[in-house]
Amino acid sequence: MQKKTIDETQQGNTLVLDDKKENTKKLFIESYGCAMNFSDSEIVASILNEQGFNTTQNLEDADLVLVNTCSIRDKAEQTVRKRLEKYNAVKRDLNPKMKVGVLGCMAERLKEKFLDEEKIVDMVVGPDAYKDLPNLLAEVESGNDAVNVILSKEETYGDIAPVRLNTNGINALVSITRGCDNMCTFCVVPFTRGRERSRDPQSILEEVNDLASKGYKEVTLLGQNVDSYLWYGGGLKKDFKDASEMQKATATNFAQLLGMVARAQPKMRVRFSTSNPQDMTEDVFHIMAKHQNICNHIHLPFQSGSDRILKAMNRQHTAEEYRALAHRMWEILPDCTISQDIIVGFPGETEEDHQDTLQLMEDIKFVFGYMYKYSERPGTLAGRKLEDNVPEETKKRRLTEIVNAQRNHSAHRTQQFIGKTTEVLIEKESKKDPNQWSGRNEQSIVVVFPKENYQPGDFVNVKIHDCTSATLIGTPAPLSVQG
Image (cartoon, rainbow, N blue to C red; front, top):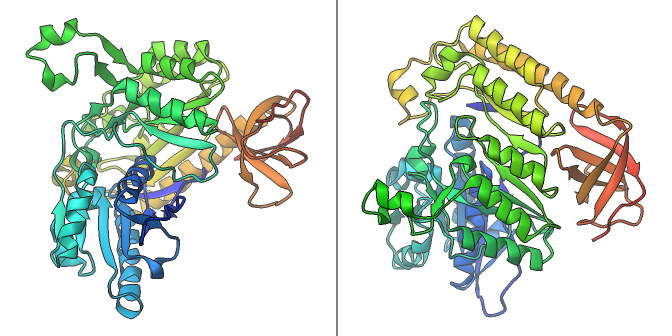
């Protein structure tokens, strides 16, 4: 699926952490795809940091090069293949001792084929095998190729203290679930990341508290589908003899976990991603309304506005149920924004189906979105059973119409802030103007304003006087909070 978005996304980020003086080897690790991949790279770097590796941003100096891959669409895989060509050139011409490994979803999908297809690759490691990296590296150092793509029903990496990809020390990702059980027909995730499992809430709280002690100001609770988070006090589902024994155990659901995190660190902003319409419940809205530090934004993919296409996608919600959920949210959280994912040109999509999607967009007016052209993914049910029969030119035209509609809706949402004051967490210097700070408000809209005497990590009340379709423009207002 080719992606177009009017919201900023991360691509190809290299991870860097503080050196350990005793470490003698250098690691270059690059990440592509979803936020879960970036979170996983933090876990990998933490494991390898204990194995004598410091990170580097200089590819030519690396003893070990790792690329954490995405397999959600063909374009993402082609990007990785081009990077491997780059690594190959560096290894051949400058650093013949360099070792290269592929991590993540693409590694899981291709498995041993990667060793045959990409001659540069020494190591293939799936998303549940990162603790085995020391053994795999030993195998590589002995002159052999190494592969571990075994999926786990238990691994959550809850016992690993990840290093942080985002070196500004402000925002952090905290994984709460791994894998997915939904089996949407277009999606490769259940096959590359395995069955869904939830992480012990105590380990989540410990990680959040540790981040707060280090000065972080915002956490995002992360999962393929956070709303289906469920932890049984007696252990994992597999630990119970039968359903009746499991029912007797104390369970923590997502709404309860969200409240626990918000209460644990009331001065820290809390976000979460990604949600699923079929699993999101009203109690999440009430928890958000109860705690001021939980941001008023929900990323809620709907994929299509056509019930016929939703059924073909194996999405367990209708367009009308999605509308009802959004309107119930606004009854409880009037200031909350919603962002979306849409797939354009799914097999069998007609012009009427496309118009249904545009109508749902018009009804909701999302704050921003991620919009894709459908591309067939090997191993998915849609890839096996459905003919990719929407012409490419039709896909392009429909995608353009959806992107244009989203741009108008984003402008509608940003214009609503003109004349109002909104709290902004400063994240970085504005890319367009070094004299301005850039941050997000709790609705996840980017805000820029003059630097004055503030610093990254400060919460600043900003009076909005102008906007674009994606950015609010303002000036600091009284009562801003520093630190």
